[in-house]
Amino acid sequence: MTLRRNTRLSIAVMAAVMVATTACTSGTTGEPSPSTDNASAEASPAFPSESVPPGVEKDSVLDLNSTKDMTGVVTTVSFADSPYAAHLPDICTFIPQKTMQQLGVETKKRGFRGTQLVSQACTMFKFDEAGNISYSVTINFFTNNITELTEPGSVVLQNRDVRLTDKISATVSKLPATSPGDPTFRESCQTSWGTFFGSINVDFRTSSPERLDPCSQSVEAATKIVSLMPKSPSQMRPAP
Image 1 (cartoon, rainbow, N blue to C red):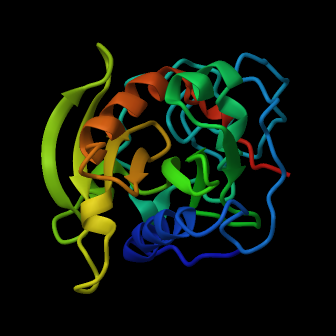
Image 2: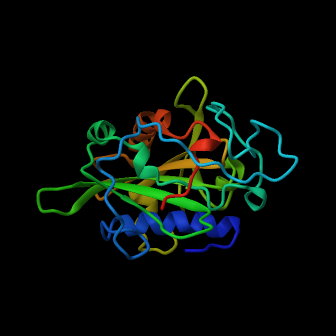
């Protein structure tokens, strides 16, 4: 899948992922994605070296080979200038079984395949006794910086400066409904924060919002996920 470098298109992709999670458990491209249930976020593979343009400062957010811990670093590099298109990893490999159990989910699926991806997703599902999706937790990576991702008009702000860790604070928001019958606003909520590569978004969607408040559940899921996310550019390698 090749996406044009357009901010609104990238955010629209996120909405498509959320809608797709309520319909099926295959990859959101329409083709099944391989299960990564046995992948461990604790593994430390050797990351291949990437070509970096001349003049890029060592250990800056633009240095794709940097191993520096950039936890808490929030890039201001724009979507159009981001070097991380085509460098978004399979997010599911960062989520171990232990964390899935903490989230109460049973399966996980990678969102997208292809080249020049400007967003990537990992969706995890909880099923009811009848086999229907009870709720989903979707982790989205974007090459948009956090200001672009949460710009007015794209989201409906619910809360800001929600502390996830001592270094990371997040914004809680909802996507506006696209039609009178669209349940997105009622059933889902997202917790987003800036990173060295762009931004991360944790979306919680439930079929029973009267029982599970999607915003509080999104924040709770984000607190369990945030410490597992990539800490350095060297971890940002595209999935095969």
